[in-house]
Image 1 (cartoon, rainbow, N blue to C red):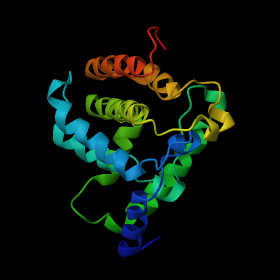
Image 2 (tube, rainbow, N blue to C red):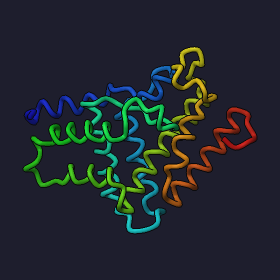
Image 3 (cartoon, rainbow, N blue to C red):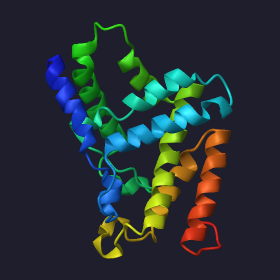
Image 4 (tube, helix red, strand yellow):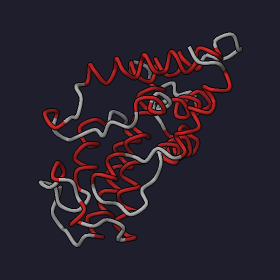
Amino acid sequence: MVNELDALLELLELKDERRTGWVFRGIEEPESVAAHTWGTALLCLLYADRAEGAVDRDRAISMALVHDLAEARTGDFATRADDESQRVSTEEKAALERDAIIDLLDPFRNRNCDTLSLWEEYEARQTPTAQFVKDMDLIDNCLQALAYEREDRYDEAETSDAFSRFDNLDEFFATAAPRIRTAIGDSLFETIRGRYEREIGRDCQL
């Protein structure tokens, strides 16, 4: 088990941990996991009041802040549109991240906080708040894909072969589409995807 200071130092490495999907796609200076976390938390702040069901905004923001903490230890496993393309199985990823988060949060277990339960609730996706946060996680990916497309920050020549069957940044939308579970998530997704398609000069659906 790590002590509190060492755990904090390891968790703060998320500021420099680059998002694997963008690296594979050849994005110039891709965002960090911590930047994605901030984007997800901001979306939770701005859209929780438009979500259906009993979504707790403050809990959603807290959940967004902890949802990728395990990646400080495991690194970022890029989610692929096709299950057979995953670097590790869903089960293996879940086990690795659970072991990491339990160890990293152990020094803080006596504090008056429920950080581990927030992470567990997010992973289970059983509550309206967890489902909303997951959708905002996916929406942040789509917004970032749109931003990178507008900024022309990716290089097809640098794209990993694992991503080569998708044009432009299409896979990030293909990955998100079947996973969205809320009405506000679906609405935001369709708006962002429409703008993305216009940016790349495409009229058809992905």
